[in-house]
Each structure stands twice: as C-alpha cells, then as structure tokens.
Image (cartoon, rainbow, N blue to C red; front, side):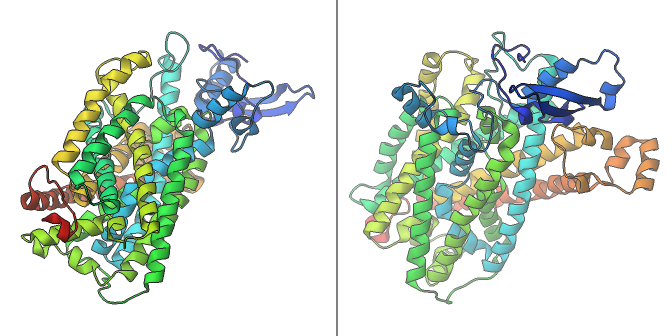
Length: 574
C-alpha cells in the first residue's frame, strides 16, 4: 500500500498496519492468504467515523501507518531486534554495511542508547554530593518519587507527540513538498501546538538555557577529570582545549540517527566508571561517621533534589529521539531499559560513596562557610567524585572514559541546540554544507560561557532548576488538561492511558457528563495526576531556581569570573 503524500513504499508488517488503531477509530483483524500478503477480513468503525457515510478506509489505514511509523528511515519491521539492522543484507557491499552498522540507527535499541547517554553522564559524578545534601533517607524518598514521575513524564511526551503528529498529518502539514518529513520536532513546538505561541517562546528560552547549561558542564567536567589525571595544566587550560575539540564534534554530527557507535561507546564509558566508583567505595570500607539522614536546610534539599530530577525524572531529547525511530510507538520499550540503566549507574554508587567517604563529605557540603575560599575549593572536589579518588590507574582510566562520554553527550545536546539555532536562522531544511558553518559561533559562545563560569556542581543545579520542572512537568501537564476535554476524547486518543486511569464513578460521571463533559473528566485519576504534577512542580521549580541562584552567587562572589583553577586541590590552588 503506498504511503499517501510520500514517495516510499510501505513494507510494514501486520503489527505495523494494526498500530495505533485508536488514532483512526478503526479496529482491524488480519489474516494471511499464504502468499505473504495481508488481507483485512473484518473492519468495524467507531466514534465519529462510524457516522460518516463517506468513510475512507484505505485513507485511514494509511493515516494509521503514518502516525505509527517514520517513513524517512529504512522500513525493516520495527521489531525490538531485527537482524537486518545489525547484520549484512544479501548483496550489500562491505563498506555500505560498515557505514550502516556504525552510523545508521533507528531501532528500539538505538533509541535506548540515545536516551541512556543523554540521561546519565557527567551529572552522575555529581550524584553523591547531591544525595548527601538531601540526606540518606530524605534522598531515598526523593529518588523514588522522581522515578515514578519520570514514567508519567514519558507518557505525557509520547501522548502529546502522537497527537501532534495526527493533527499535522490530517491537515497536510506533516510532509514537505517532496513528500518527506524533514523538520525535526522539538519540545517547544509540541508545547506551542497545544498551548499557543506564549508557551512556545517560553519553552524555547527554557530549552536553550538548559541545553547551554548542560553543554557548559560537559566542558567543565572534562577539564576537571583531565586535571585529576594531569595537574601540570590548570583547569582553565584544559577547558580551552576541550572546548575547541567539542566544537568540532557539535559541527560535524548532523543527526541523532548517526550516533549509534558513539552512543555504544558512551554507555560502556559510563558503566565502567560507575563500576569503578562502586568497587573503590566498597573496598574503602563502610564508616558510619558523618552519615546524614535528612537535609539540614531547604537550600540543601532543593539544590540536591533538582540534580536528581535531571538524572531520573526528565528526558531532554525525547522528541528528537522519537523523530529518528522507525516505529516511535515502541519508544516506551527504549525508555524502560534506559530507566533501569539510569538507576543502576547512579543510585548504588551515590549511596556507597556517602557511606564510604562519610568522614569527608560533611566538611565539603556545608554552606555555612560561604566566606571561606578553601571550603569552596574542597566543595567542588566532591561535586565531581572522580577528582576525589586516589591517584591509581583505575582512577585515570575512569576519568578518561568519562571524558569520552562527555564528548558524546556534548554532541547529543549540541545537536538539539543546533536544531533550534538553525530554525531561528531559517536554514533547518537547507543542505548540511550551509548549516554546518553556522554552528561554529553557537558552539563558540557555549565555550566562552564555560570559561566565564566554571562552577560545576552549582551549574548542574541551576540549569536543571530553570528547565526541568517547567519543560517536563508544568507545561506538559497544562497541555494534557487543555487537549483532552472529555472522557470521550481520552478514550479516542492516539496513546490511551491505562484503563484504571480513565475510570470514573459511573452514575456521577453520567450526571456530570450531561452538564459538561469536562466535569466528568475531572473525576478520573488521569486528571488528578496531571493537576498534581502542574501544581507541585510549579512550586518546586520556583523554589529550586531561587536556591540554585543563591548558591551560584555564593560561588561567584568567592571566585569571580574566569577562575583559572576553580575546584583545584588546595596545594595546586595557590
């Protein structure tokens, strides 16, 4: 069956044709005639389509396939594992196979690797100090809560993406004039589609601040890690070196689907570094001295919690990842694996470091010594746990592995920022040789800011507080409450929530439905969760921004701008 408005031929299997049936109000039942061709032996229409005498079955089939899949990438079935994605195909040249294996990734596994690399990287090194600020018990409760809301966040993003895609396919704006979908959808476009231009521009500002912040910390973390390996150069010098190298990475990697091998290397780097921290802390021994169970102040809890929200509760490049998948509907599988990965590489090592090094952490995280420059030098050392480890070959290997991952993370976030930049310049659909040179000043600006304000731990908290609550919870929850105006809308959404989330007391629901359908929707757990997310993270985000700005100010007053060796060991600071 030819894809309407598109130059590719569909090769989707039964499950692909049957995908997202709720999105078109059709139920399909398929049989195979023995020759490999799929036949429809039963069709029933529901909802508004059942009332339409001009119902176009073939058109709705094509619409369902377009919503479920991505015709811009090779169609190989969209399964979790397909041998054609990883092994040579019949008659394929060896160089073509090597290029495809290394750089063309559109599968569930590729999406997992992108999410995992973007989710946990250099910020993992800040996890032990952030956990200490919240306390062992207070931090544990916070981590569990963020794990739960992280799943809801993924549901919100996937549901909104699929609704936007259906809207644009129906109004004809999804495909470009040549029948391809070239525009990479990003979070601010999704929010703007449902809430209006004010939300779009607010989200652009928040997304740009967040992306710049996380890219700055990649440069700063590289400088800190390499300084711990070779202190003959100060951190500013290392930052200048790595800022230049990372600029080249950002310029030449054009698309998320080209990151397969880099993502694999990044995952191995983070996994090995996390294992090093776990083993080192375990052999160090467990000491009870200095163990803190609860945060000592609101500032400590908010600045620690917002870092863990960034690790476990938010998903920075989810729409860009969906856009590069063959079957975006399978993203929940990718995220499930990435979610487990994030837990394994961040939570155990954070707790073990706190137990093993409890004798030094309290003196490194107390804000009462705000006027003591030596305190701030020490405090930043624990913000990046690798720099606190003894000088061993294993420590050097872990530091170098993290540098490799930070390059990859810089490329991932740099591409997202580049997409925004190119759309602002209206060159996002132009050939690569026009877009690539225009990325240079953008990366140079990030490089400059990293040298201006090299405060690693406080920056992690600041950029997370400015963007994570707003982009991941406040505005998406508002979108959900505005998009779905009745239980009927919820039942006919592209991505239906679980049945228990759609439940409401039957008699009361029927009475309220007669008055106003939205009143009946307000009875569902789905509605209550979205309202809670909106209100809680609106307050949480405001408080986190205040306390994070206060912390950055304290660090800036102590060190000033362009600190040459911020966070160096005391003997090297002078």
